[in-house]
Structures are given as structure tokens and as C-alpha cells.
Image 1 (cartoon, helix red, strand yellow):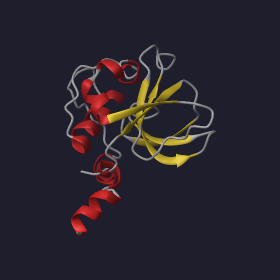
Image 2 (tube, helix red, strand yellow):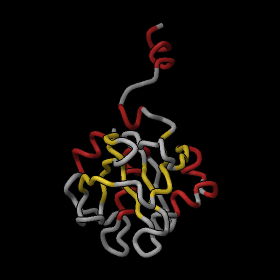
Image 3 (cartoon, rainbow, N blue to C red):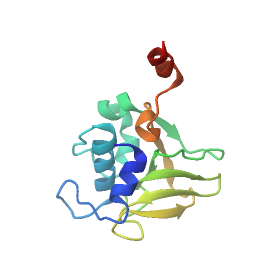
Length: 154
């Protein structure tokens, strides 16, 4: 499943992926990791832990690059955006970037931000720690990189 297929399938739905604590933002990311990347997320902690504990999480480290939020940063389509412990009473927040935005704002698909169900939301960068960006962008865009295309054409 690609990013677009994921959005088309789950947008507007409330997902309790792990069956614990009801519908949470982390449930959306666990579902995204499973369906798009084939990663079965365990009990990895609250939302901020996906970014903060990146170096101790082999599945994330092998499949994603951790990129810090800076004044010139704009999330790309498919990036997993992570908010710090300053958000949501120390739990942080986590969402999936649409690729729309600039250095003042960005859009992401969120669960349990303003609505329980997966919804497109406009955000500022307040309390955003950074993103996890897939090393394999074919999972996002559904196309192969040029070296793979070259191999298949020759």
C-alpha cells in the first residue's frame, strides 16, 4: 500500500490499532507503519518517543531518517511528524505530513488532534521536534528510483 492508498482508505476513520487506550494519534502511526512499510510497531511509548528514542529503535533506525525541525525545514509528503513532550500533557503528538506547507505552516493527517478520526489539519511548527522520513520513498510515491529503473530497462 502506498501513502495515497493509505490516505484514501483511512481518511475520516477512527482507528484503535492496538486496542488499548482508545483512539490515539499513535494508533494512526502504527497502522501507517504496518500497512505502508510492513513494520509491526510494538509498545514504543507515547508519541514523542518515536522521535526521542529513535536511536534505540532498530525498526525506525533501519527504515527512517530522523530530521530535526529548523527554521528552514518543511516536512515532505509521507514524513512522520513528531511533537515534543510540550504537547498534549507530556505525551507529544504524531501525524503524517501531506507535503503541503512552507516554513510557517504545514498540513498533516492527524488522529485525535481536533477530531478523533483521521483528518487533514493545518499546523504551525510550535513544539514540533522533527520528522521521521522513510529511506525508501517508493513506499510514499509508488515509483522506483532511477537506478532501479535503469536495471529493469537493460
